[in-house]
Length: 90
Image (cartoon, rainbow, N blue to C red; front, side, top):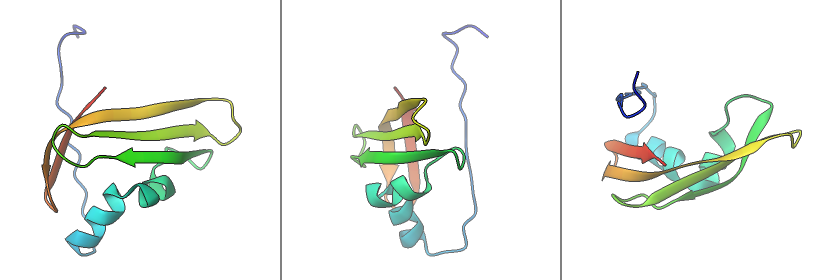
């Protein structure tokens, strides 16, 4: 694949809870730091979220042993409250 080619990735999940509750847990920084980690050896000590089109988000992910860390960040392209989020990773 040419590095200028872009693929669209769509992620869908079914959660047995009220949409408003799921929306809050998915988007509120105080909740993001509790669930956003790729494995038990990692954690997310900091999260920021400006949930609006053009707004930025950032989740700081770090290995618990301190060996590595990175910022997962992007800009929202579209936000429809309780319905849809589209973003570009920066």
